[in-house]
Image 1 (tube, rainbow, N blue to C red):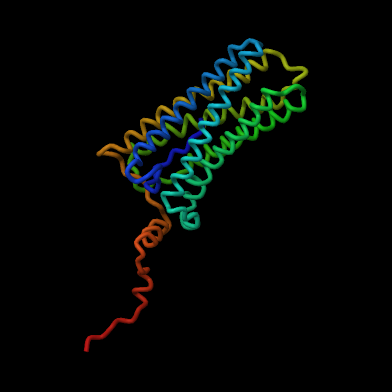
Image 2: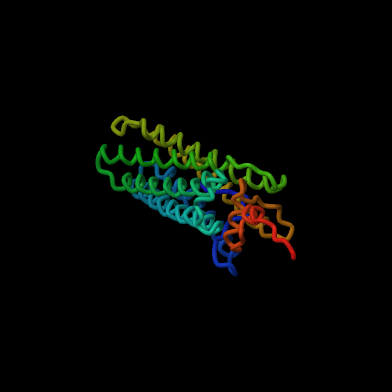
Length: 270
């Protein structure tokens, strides 16, 4: 499933004494969601027109998307907590706003739209609801792809080659999987329900299944990345740029800005 992969130090996934445990929980829940989605889509591909198996596959996929929506909401909350909810710091570091804040929000919104689309498809009794379901699935896939593109547009200054390799191992499968889901959603939207052939329906399902397999690969590499980031020889992570890190530290410590200090007239000893 779609997932933010960032190399920032400014993140806080839970209470100070359980940060590592909560980040591991986040990675484990993400892996569970991707495996559940792949299982649901596999059941959908193997349904062969059976209504019961089709409905079960759609329901399992909806539960998986709900899990991943919660994971992305957790990612957004972790990065907000990492900067003490100072959203204004994004003015100085655009990547903070576009990647750490906007990307998980888009991912979560895409999951919600996809859940709506699956629910409409599950309870649809006519062409009108099927059209609305196709629109919701297309909008959700578009948000996934946009969020994946934003997550891939990161600038590295301190991170070494190992950290960048771990980042790419998560970002590339997620991006490719999002692209396949968008292709499947476009094909599903263009298909006329009254004229739809079994072959066209199966092609959309198999494309979606391939996208979910890529997301499973991204989840596995994400778990590996989280594990490596918490080791004693962990690679260096990125700090905030554009003066945002200094402003955050100054606000936390309550220090007087250096500009004010330098502007103060020197005192003379008498």
